[in-house]
Length: 155
Image 1 (cartoon, rainbow, N blue to C red):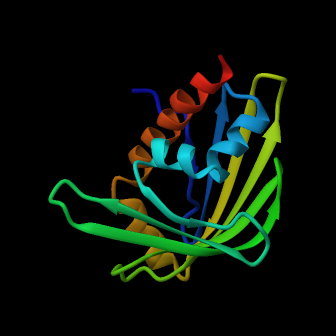
Image 2: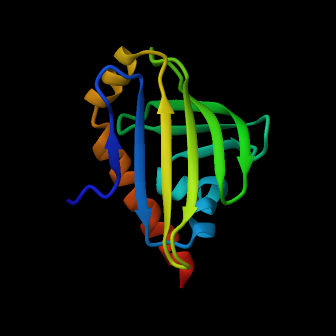
């Protein structure tokens, strides 16, 4: 499977840069991150809370194959429709702590768009731990599912 989502991690830095071009109009790509029903479909999670505004927050819950529930949540610091979301992200019961995410949405053509995610971790060690997981494969799978789910809305 081709990895369309690119993850760039410079040695010795506590950040990663994630980029992906989508065969989706900008408005639909952005909608995939802010509409609870769509988020649930492509992320495979239950949206418990999603307040898309400055000083808003979100809380999601997922269930693993063993039936265990896992939560993750964050605070939204900046929200500019079809342009930018700045937020924190934290997994419950994980020793990684919160990370800071800058999501930038860009129109390429009427039918294509680009997402650039700049993610900052508390330390280089935590970032490296995340990258040792199947992180790159996971985000590629999630973004491919996003494109598939949201692509059906184009029709």
